[in-house]
Length: 54
Image (cartoon, rainbow, N blue to C red; front, side, top):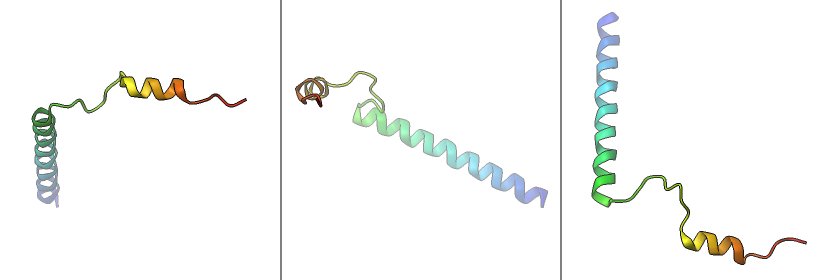
């Protein structure tokens, strides 16, 4: 049973590393940020254009 647990742990680590590498490659290829802390200009305009409830 101990050998099987080690095998499962090794496989899960390999899958995790592979997924991380794929995510990094995807971000580099697209050249986009995953999370942008600064909203775009359009988002700011929409906030100010929408009427405030009275």
